[in-house]
Image (cartoon, rainbow, N blue to C red; front, top):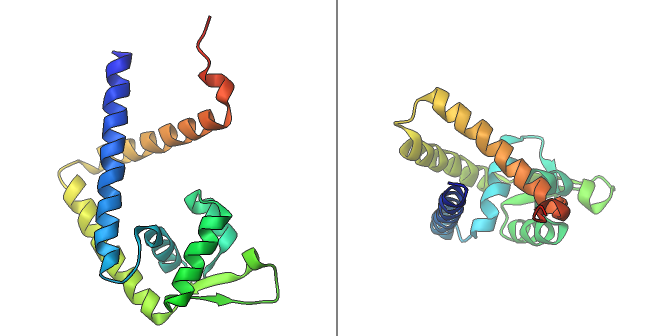
Length: 155
């Protein structure tokens, strides 16, 4: 049974990740953006006062190099702006421009429609349990990557 659970989990997570990546790529292509820009646009769209690069890094579990690259791309395209306050590079707030806000609103609608499509027939209480469980599993897996000795087989 353990092996079957692993296979179901591994195959399901791979399929979900690949499908989400494909959907994000297709959606963002119409804006001249990449799938890696989705989370930034959504997170910045939720925060009128903006977020720092460090906050984006923590929220999305991304390294500083990726944050820097994506921020530069979005600034170059005119979708976000950096509010410089004379502070350190990663402490300046990033906010959406009007064009960026328009894309973020579109993304919100598309995401809402997608979530309704994939979970519309599932009762809200079941979805609550699912997301709590998924959050716990993802945090536990992340913790496992931080503690490789936990992967050693018992003797």
